[in-house]
Length: 458
Image 1 (spheres, rainbow, N blue to C red):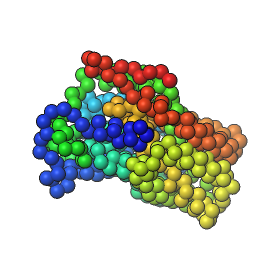
Image 2 (image 1 turned 90 degrees about the vertical axis):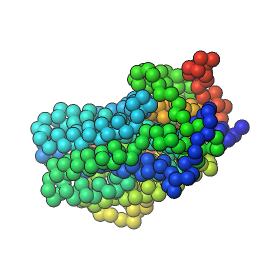
Image 3 (image 1 turned 45 degrees about the horizontal axis):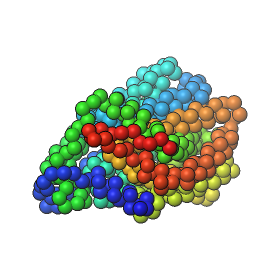
Image 4 (image 1 turned 90 degrees about the horizontal axis):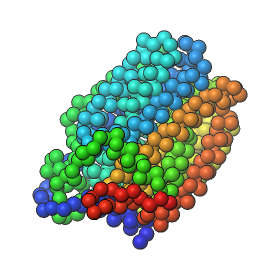
């Protein structure tokens, strides 16, 4: 059986259940799953306001407080680490407590953590607010939320929905980045922090209103579920969410597939959020480019990322995800090798070409990576992907800190771009190494009692 066939079979199994069929959601003019997807999209956009903030505010914070870029990058690194580590635990919390509660609390944390730095005077306060509070909040609304919503509410169009929801982060960057750069330039960086706080808090009423936890709450099946699918929701896990998250990691970590996915996705984080997302604006500023111009270029990355990620989701429903990932990482690495020669004091055609290409490839890796997790790990895929995403953020954190240190000690970012390009080529090799046989062996087995058995070690 081909990988695509197994992917489809696993997807169908997730939507299937036992029991009598109840009235189909087809009688609804618009399936409620689409409303859930819309609110999830807006939620991720609200949280993405903070994702745009560090790149815009690094230079103003450096100028006002005199903190080295390495110190400010360290605060971003803490955020990125917690952003990733919170993902599997938040996915387990969503299984136990529901999506709505987890997301509403997370948005409040982002709002508070974005507002408090307005009154800070010491660098540790930046680490506390940007790093810990906002890191935990945004982690609950990361790609684990995308995997949970897409897997729970959709059987048909799952890859496409995954791409659209993933693109929400880029859309948030597009919406907020130029505005935050303008606010910081005209009214000071504190006004940008307040705007970010308000944006996150404004989404909470939408979450309470429309972000339903499961199709069975409305007496319907998932969008595109086969005829005869039960409306009854599978039992909620009864154990502690942290135990569920850790046990899932323990089982997945016994498979080679997990480590190949985690390793390649760590490179994805290092080459996007950690390096380009955090240091592109300061690097362009080093070459004499105005901050607002550099922010506009980074926002364009978000524009093209929307197109690239949605198209990647569409391709994931049709093309072997491993082939897509190998191509994405190879092309990304090549573009990073070229980037140091493209910086100048003004915007030009070659830099615009880089922005267009890098934007199309920015998070196009997410839909095929989620698809591979689903093929390999079935119903535990959202939590497994949460751990894979944690590796993404560890890679991003290392790049955010490492690139800042390179800049402080060498006076330029050039070495950081070359290292990231090399890592991308290595990630392409990891994706090629994920074989069909290993994917089938990685799927958790069930014991007679219904408990998950550990996958065979690879």
